[in-house]
Length: 494
Image (cartoon, helix red, strand yellow):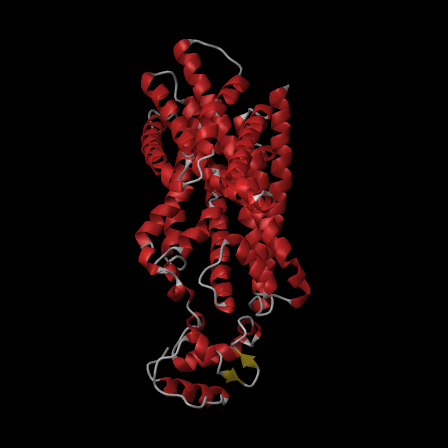
C-alpha cells in the first residue's frame, strides 16, 4: 500500500472517478480493508473475493499503471505466507532438482533404446520443453488464482477447483469434479510409481543374489519378500521419523548414480554401432518413459508455495528454467551414453547392465536400498489422499488403527500389482503413458484454458490452440503409450 493513502485514492479518482471514503486518514490500511471501500466505475466491489476476477482486466491494469504497480500487486499472496520458514531460491532449486533427479534417470537409456540416438536427443529436449511449459502453466495459474481469491497459496487440486469456480459460469459445476480428478491422478501417479519401484528393487536384489550366490528364484518371490521391510517402513506416518532414512537414501543414491555414470561413460563404442532413429512403433514407449523419468509436477506447487520469493520461480532464468535445463541435459546425456554403451541389451534400469564386478553389485544394492528407504515418504501422497475419503467413515476411537490398517493394505496392493506385472521396462512405460500424460500435460492445459477463459487467449487465441495441441499430445501419449506397453507386457508373458 502507498504510504499516503489519500494520494492513492486520488489516483483512483483520476483514473476511474472512484469515490473517496469518508473518515480517511493517512494511516496504512490493509488490503482487505481498502478493498471493502473502493468501487471502480461502480461495478467492482472487491469485498467480494471473486469479483476482482470478473472485472475488466484492462481497467484493472490502468489503475495499476497509474499507481506504478503490477497486476499481481493488488494482492500479493506471498505477503500472507509464513516467511519465517520460507525457502530461499537456492533451496527451492535444490528441492526441485531432488524431486526430478531420481531413479527415473536410470530408465533413460532404455528410453533411447526405443527412440535411437538422434531421435532420443531431440525427443528428450522437446519433451523437457513441454514438461517445463506445463509446469509453468500450473504455477502461473496458481498465482493468478491466488490473487483472484485472495488466498496465500493453492495446491494442485485446489488450483483446478478454483479455476472452474472463478471461470466461465457454465463450467462452475465442474469445480468439485476437477478437484477430485486431480486428486485421483495424483493418487494413481504416486501409487503406481511406488509399484514400479517395487519391481525395480526386486530385479536388483534378484540379479545380485544370482550373480554372487548363484541362487535362482522367480522374480515374484523376491517381490513378495519385499513386503517384510516395506510394510513397517511404509506405514510410518510421521515425516520426522523418516528423516534419517531419507538422509541415508540420498547418500546411497548419490554414490550409486556416480558409479553408474562412471561405468556408463567408460569405453563408449562408436555411434555408428547404434540406431540413430528407432522404429516408429517404439516411439510411444520412448515418450512414455521420458515422461515417467522427467515429470515431477506433483511436488512443484509445494516448493513454490514455500519460497521466500515465489516470483523468482518463473521467468528468465528463474528457478524452474534453471532446474529443468539441468535435468534435461543430464537425462539426455545419460540416455545417450547408456544406450550407446549397452545397445539392444539395455535394461529397464541402467544399473542392471553394470556387470558382475563387486563394485557393480554394491551399486545395485545401494540404489535399491535408497528406494526402499524413501518408499514411505513417496507413499505419503497416495495414503493421505485415500485417508481423506476413508477417515471420516471410521469411528473416532479407531482413527489411528484404521489409518495404519489402510496404509498396510495399500502397501500390499503395490506388492500384488508388482507380482502381476513383474517386467520393469513396459511397466515404466505404462505408468508414464497413463499417469504422467494426464497429470503432467492434460491437467495444466485444461487449467490454463479455464483460468484465462474470461480474460482472453491472446492474439488469434493462440493460447487456446496451444492448449488444444497439448491436450491432443497428452491423449496420444495416453492411448499409444498404453497400447505399446500392454503389447510389451503380453510379449514378456509369452
